[in-house]
Amino acid sequence: MGGALGNLLAFVVAISVLVAVHEYGHFIVGRLAGMKVLRFSIGFGKPIWTRVGRKDGTEYCLSAIPLGGYVRFLDTREGPIPEEDEGRAFNQRPIPHRIAVLLAGPAFNFLFAIVAYWALFIYGIPTLVPAVGSVEPGSLAAEAGLQQGDKIVAVGDVETGDWESALVAMLDHMVSDGRVPLTLETQDGYQHPVSIDIGNDARRLTEPGMLFEGLGFQPFGPGDLPADIGRVEDDGPARLAGIEAGDRIVAVDGERIDDFGDLVDIVQARANKEVSVAYLRDGQRLTTTLVVQEQVVDGQVRGRIGVARGGSFDEYYYQRRYGPLESLTQAMGRTWSSTIFTLRMLGRMITGDVSIKNISGPINIAQFAGESAQRGMDYFLGFLAIVSISLGVLNLLPIPVLDGGQIVYQSIEGLKGSPMSERAQIMGQQIGIFALILLMSFAFYNDLARIFG
Image (cartoon, rainbow, N blue to C red; front, side, top):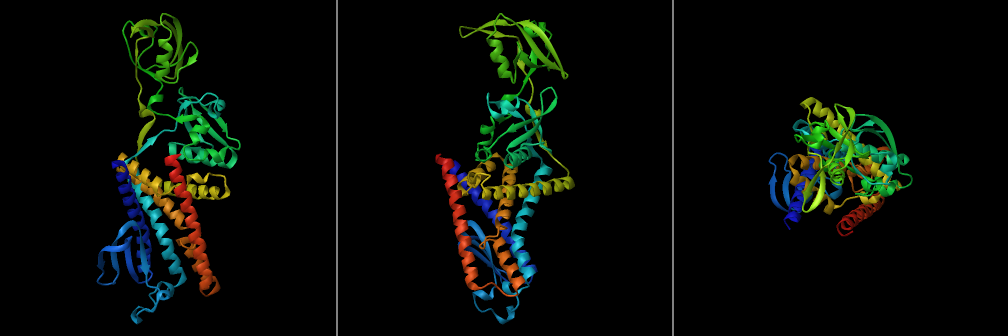
């Protein structure tokens, strides 16, 4: 219950913050454009707190249902207006001013994302180097030649310093031409290109959680660290064979060693046997032979060579941090690339190239909000930036009940010199409401399918 309540609280905070930012964009630009604002509300329903501005007469409200908000402008279509407010109604202002007000909401969502990323880049973003973990035998990744420990330094022409950029590029290539071109760097520093051929299976692999399962490998984690030697016992088999601390064992009797667990498994099965050992020292591959020592553990004979695990996950994990000015450039670039990627994914959902199972509803968003909040403020701020971008993109769609649809209405009025007919506007509103209901139905279905399926 605590987890569910925590998710709900994080969701409410996220929605309240992002909607407040969005509506404040409408509010402040509307005020600058000479429009009268009747009410600025955070939340829907009955106001539980209200303050009336002394100069502008605007009602500032906190309402009972904290799942959104709105700005209400003076509008002659809703009834007669006072004589002193003539010319200040939304529909009485010039069309460019109205469009600016409508654009301001999504624009402030993008601006929020830039500010959030700017703060994160100054503080330091936890970053995982994209690298290959365990590879499923016989999988697409195995057939392409991926091996555990390989670092993904580029996807196509895109250099990848983190998993986010790698995943975006992988999905883009996969949907575009049915393959994933990678440049890999092996554990000994050698770079080479490979290509994973997806064929006609791209749409299935775009379903949530299916990408790595379908490709046949997992992202590199702490358990996948290579067999680096941290300590060598005096007079042990490894010491007598010339192996030293800092060496990396890569093969035993010709069998590839991907991590320390592989080394333990192979050595334990070879008690009292002579084996050849290949290892790396300062980038150079060396070989030696040794006799595996015998030890008895719980009544079973097992082999040992007298070494202890070394290495550090620091090679694959770092804090990406920039100065204030460079952070701003990085933040703008991250926001732009995320916006373009979101638009591409939406377009490909419409064409059927990407699974609509990627549409998330409030349940799934609440789970992500709760998980990111538990991991720390930096993760939660990053989550807010991503959702803010999605909110900005969604509101720019040409659906009549959204900002994008209203911009279309205003543009048509500007071209024809008069507002659209009431019948056409009502029909557009009905189509827009139907489209949103359909979208939310998919989102709720996907949420429930993730929970119960």
